[in-house]
Amino acid sequence: MITVSDQAIGQLKQLLQQQESPDMGLRVYVTPGGCSGFNYGMGFDDAPANDDEVTEQEGIKVFVDPYSATYLDGAEIDYVDSLMGGGFTVHNPQAVKTCSCGQSFDTGEGASTAKACSAV
Image 1 (cartoon, rainbow, N blue to C red):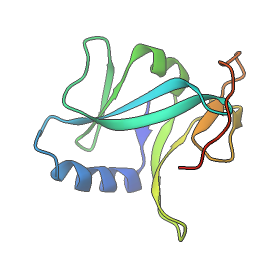
Image 2: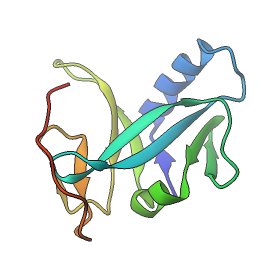
Image 3: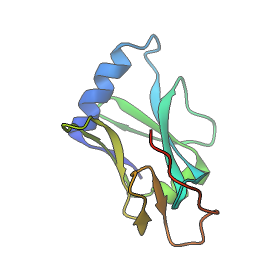
């Protein structure tokens, strides 16, 4: 399903140590919108939902809802550190088009109505 790069695992371990819940995991999801059709989202969650797909890599749990799993199969969560700032990113083999902001993608399967990109 989803893999997590070594760089992202290192960053996530540091962030999770600051949380108060030892069972907390990373929720990765997709929502309709953005300039290419879909947006990626990530955040910490205390526990998976009953229908989530759950993977674990080096102690990092990743929760993905069924809707998002369709669009994230084979994706990798990575962490990029650059002069212009660092952050988590998704390398998604299903994305046939991405926005220049890097937060929006299209799978070529008739995504929702595109909207203008906004700088974060």
